[in-house]
Length: 428
Image 1 (cartoon, helix red, strand yellow):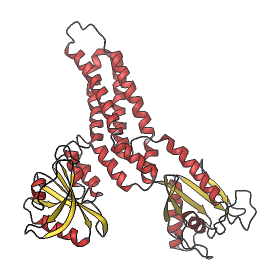
Image 2 (cartoon, helix red, strand yellow):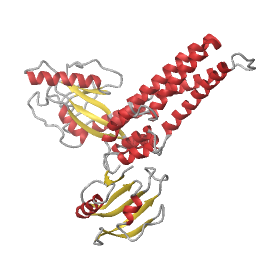
Image 3 (spheres, one colour):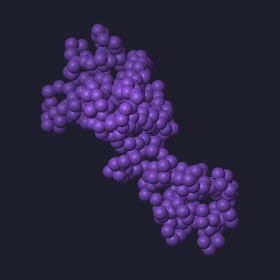
Image 4 (tube, one colour):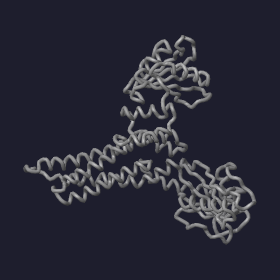
């Protein structure tokens, strides 16, 4: 296997920049640039020189021996001064070594997967941790990366394999006098796993929303103050405002952190009978985004009715509360009246929702668990046939186990790996 290297920190000026090398020649290559390598899992300051002996920089060097490293291979890291010129020079020197090449995006993590240091779920957790913008996203990603979901899936897999083994043992000794009935233990194992799967599947949607962010659409007539409200909530001028009705044509998105919960505010086109083709398209988009949003804020003038069906947790507000006396709670994007109360309501709603989050954070996790659960449900039904149906039950359980192994990336993973690792940087 090739030895690879890459910058593990973002390009550009910084206090410290890191270059990582991994593979069978990592130690040999690194030692060619310094007097000697540090001891394993220790750091040491070394003078980094090129192959002609010219001094490049003084670096803190860390050494890790495989398989006890992130990638499962020999690894060396150079912690250099964060100069663009220094990094370019070190990269150029490393590029001159035979059998040493620049890593592909996510290749270090891919090697960790291939060498059994991470399972596929942990790889996704690492990607989510890198992308995390809020405290709740960080905590959720860290739970997945630490192996909580993978360990739970492994427990389910182990129980299903035991259930199948009990049935297959009964089949193997069908012609002999077997002194025990395994059906009770098998039913207990299957019921427990299926119950756990049902709970985890139910929490997947909320976990996905934590990862991607909840969407809150601001809905109302043209010139009712939606963009002004968005700007006030965002704390900046994110949307253009004017006294001309229909200023907003497209959906404007603003991300915010609400007590650790990621929320995307959507400023939509005012809903009315469109005056031109572009406005009609904008209104249609506004309706579609509002219908798919997790929550809607209806901003209404006196006499207005909500332009869409009001769902549970939707918020109805009186627009321009500094100018009008309306029956709904009043808010003013201009003066800020009611803004803190609105943020408090949204925070309460979303903190209540995230309480039901599971560990599975991606749609493919839920799909794999549903397939496994379906196989278990079929198996429970087939058990009613008695020993004559045990071979069919065992076959269904193998399919259920297969679905869990797909979830962990042990089989059929190649078709999704390129997509997953494409979002990783070179040094990860």
